[in-house]
Length: 68
Image (cartoon, rainbow, N blue to C red):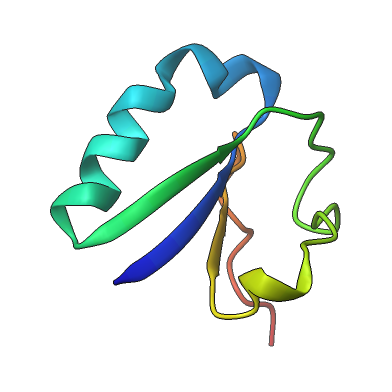
C-alpha cells in the first residue's frame, strides 16, 4: 500500500476531501497534515516508522516557468 501525507495551506484545508479522494483513486492511503504549513520548505519531521511515504505539499501558486 502506498502512503501519502497531504499538506495544504490554510486556504485550501476546507477542500481537503477533494485532494484525498483524488489520491485514494490513485491507490494511496492518505494522512492529512493538520498543522501549519508555510510552503514547500516546511516539511514535517516524521517518525522513523513512516520512512516509506510520499509527501504531497500543495500550494496556492504554480511554480514559475523555467528561466534560461
